[in-house]
Image (tube, rainbow, N blue to C red; front, top):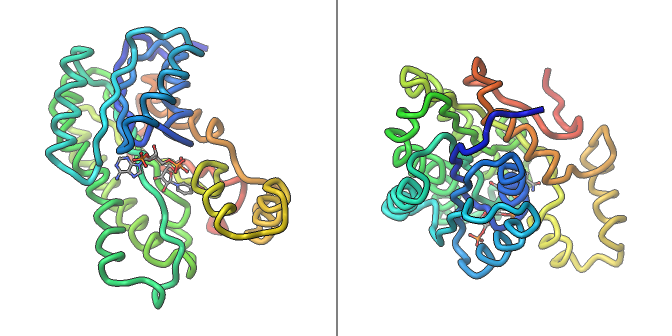
Length: 264
Ligand code: NDP
């Protein structure tokens, strides 16, 4: 199936690992140009070079080391992508992490940082890209969010609250940008097997091997499908929301949680 993304340009934040990297790879395979950012330039270069080789997409990648919480850096990232490819048709706001802590375990500075990352991590890039997106007839923004936005967890208290704020903000953006033909949607993740979970496994000191550890995690969290998701299983809904074939979908959320959500 042709998703009609060939020669379109999509910005992906946090593209050096996990969901962002899988999304970049899928876009390249669809013939799109990918402008990618993350903070660690070396890792970004190495992973995207491999993606470029695998997908035979020379010249279709533009990689920039930048922090999504830095508005000026997002402005420069957007400008350089427009210079490289001539315009912007999509933005995937993916960069981030979560803070595994209860309210009592979290300092006020950590709370501010978490809200800054979740809200400005999306606002900075969307504000910088908006006028370029408005010039595209297929403009689409996808915010990578979490089921925590609707189903908070005590052990991820501040991340859950910040995720809820982001979901609310994304809905407002879908209204304010819709007048310029820019669609804005969210993908709400459950537990996805990426760097976030390998790092937690490594610091857990568990005697179990990784497969057993994630299996137990899935059982403890009540994931209906009995396993964590893969980055590719998240990349596909993201890429399909970017596709003009989803042209009438805006202000929507897609859950990708293997059945972990308990709400109706
Ligand atoms: P990974 O840790 O595998 O990748 C995170 C990516 O974001 C890396 O490229 C990282 O690169 C980049 N990044 C992190 N902070 C910043 C920043 N401030 N500015 C620019 N880039 C940044 O994570 P996942 O793929 O698992 O997560 C992707 C998104 O999905 C995140 O927003 C995460 O919170 C969310 N999510 C993930 C879940 C999961 O189970 N995996 C569950 C729910 C939500 P670098 O460090 O070099 O900047």
